Length: 471
Ligand SMILES: *Cc1c(COP(=O)(O)O)cnc(C)c1O
Image (cartoon, rainbow, N blue to C red; front, side, top):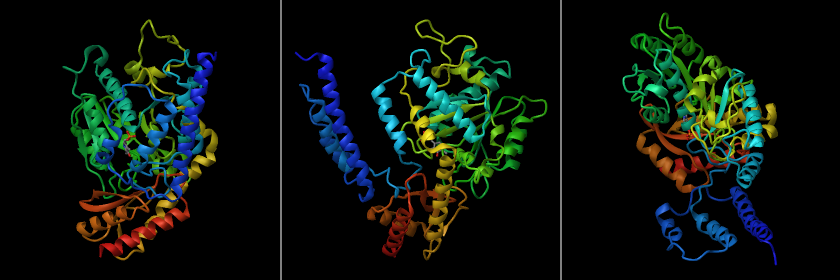
C-alpha cells in the first residue's frame, strides 16, 4: 500500500507539472499574442460559474480546466508592448522565487518561526536602502503595494506628529486629538486620498502644482504658514502618473522640517514607480534631497518587475512605525527588547506570504549595475517612444519626458479618443487613455524590463496606423 505522503507527493508532482506547462505556454505567447483579452468578464462569468460541484475533482484536471477557461480573458500585461497604467512585467528570477514562496507556504510574520524568510527580507531591505541611498537605520516593510505602503508610512506619521503634540493615538484614539493638517500636491495619486480616509484624517489640503504636476515649493511655504503650529504631514511625490515628474524634495524637506517654534512636519514620499530613479546614478538627480524625508512608499511590482503583490514601505525612525504596528501578545513569539523587529512589527498584516523573497531574488540576479541599467533602459525607451510620437503629424507630447511616462494628445479631445480606440482595437500594443491638463490624452507608461527595440517599433507603427484610421 502506498503511504498518504507518497500519494500526496505524486499528486503535487502531476498538478504542478501541469501548472508549469501552462505557465510556459502563457509566457511564450507574449511573443505574438494580441495584448487585449478576447472576452470580457461578463462573457466569462458563465464559464467559471458552473454549478458548485458536489464531488471532488482531480487537482491536475482542475488546473487544466482553469488554464483553458481563463485563456481568452487574460490581458497580456507581461508583454513588452504593454504600456497601460503603471504595470511592469515579471523578471524570471522574481517569478521563480515567487513559485517557491507559494510552495514553501511560510507564514512570514515571525523571525523565530520562519527564519529563512526573515533573513532574506532583511537582506533585501538592506540592499534597497543601499541602492536607493536612503538612511541605513530605516525600517523596511513588505506590503501588498504602494497603496498599503502609503498607508503604513502615513500611519507612522500620524502617530509621530500627534505624539509631538502630547497625544498618544494608540491609547487615546482620534476623537478629541489635535487636528492634523495633511498637505498634498494638487496632482498626488488618488491612493493618498484613500489612505487618509482609512486613517481617519479626512480630506487633505491641496497645494498648487506647476505645469509638470510638481508640487510648488512657494505654494507649500504659504500652506505651511497657514497651517499654524499644530501637527502637519506633507505628502510629496516621486513620479507623477502623467508626466513622470518629481517634486522638489530638498526644498519640501527644508520647509517642512524647519517650522520655527512649531514641531517639524513629517514628510512622506509616494514613489510607487519613481523612487527607483534613486537607484540609477544617471537619474538620481531627479530625487535629489528625498533622503531627508521621514517615510517613503514604493512598489516592487511596478518598476522592479516582480509579480504582484509587492510594495515596500521605508520609515527612517523605526519607533513610530513599531509603536503603530507592533503586536505584543502571549501566543506569538516575539524577539524581545533590542532584537531586530519581527516582520509583523512593521506592517499592518500578521499572516502574510513571503513577498520580500522575489525582491531578494531579482536584486541578487540584477546586482547594482543591473538595477541601474533596468531603470535607465525604461527611461531611454520612454524618450525613444516620445520622439516617435512627436514625428507623427498632429501628435503633441504634453510633458517633459525625463523618466518613464508620456502623455500625448492628437488634436481635439474627440480625435485623441478616436486614436486611443483605434490603438486598442488594433491589439498590437496597449496604451491607456486619461485626462491631463484638461485634455484627453494617450498615456504611455514604460515599466516592463523586456520591452526591446522591436516592441518599440511595432508599437509606434500601431499608433501610426491608429492615427491614419482616426482621420
Ligand atoms: C500605482 C501607484 C500607487 C498605488 O500603488 P498600488 O501598488 O496599485 O497599490 C500609488 N501612487 C502612485 C504614484 C502610483 O503610481
